Image: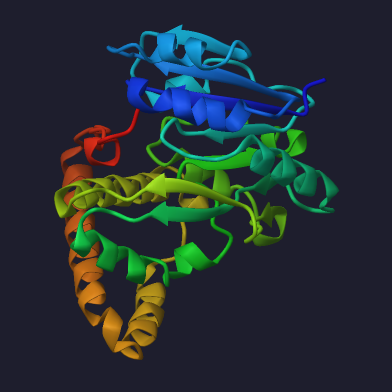
Length: 282
């Protein structure tokens, strides 16, 4: 019997997909995993099939995460987790999260607590010390590569819209009391390995926020101004964070300026895979 469906969109993830799938499936029954290999130019599909015989692989020609998310109809009566291929999460964590969501009286969407694995760059590590204090990180964080929806929660919307920030879109569909974010369950992503890679990632995130505000203004988060004031107050009391705050502020401002320029020019935002997070991974 299927207790949880897991969908993994994957574009050129040959280096990471095997480990990610084995971590989800090893020792856990009741999970079905479908990998949507989208527009791959490497052996992502082969690596996914080789990881575990329970994995179903669907290949599509379009290199698009949204196209991958919409490649199959959602399960009708089963919770579903959407997990990026470069995320590390155990099947036990996903099953426990699904169980708690089912036991919750109001919960419709859930995510474990995000753990950012340290970067090889000292500057990037300083950035994340401050990022960890942001309001976005502290309040009902859903996304950053993983979110789980109850069957009822998934019925709240149909196809995923063509947005950069699918996770932010999903988060904003649900009120705070409908989100479950237990601190004792975790998943991990790697921090970028350089300031350049970090800025590219931050630019994409900023562009996703601007796009959501433009196309779905009713779902747009509050202006970052109030959160910025709170962050300044938190960092000011901790001298060891002052360098990190300078790094965070510079990256944030640069990324937002670049995202606004892209928005004005109506230029598409390319994913630009961060190879720095995959160095040395097998």
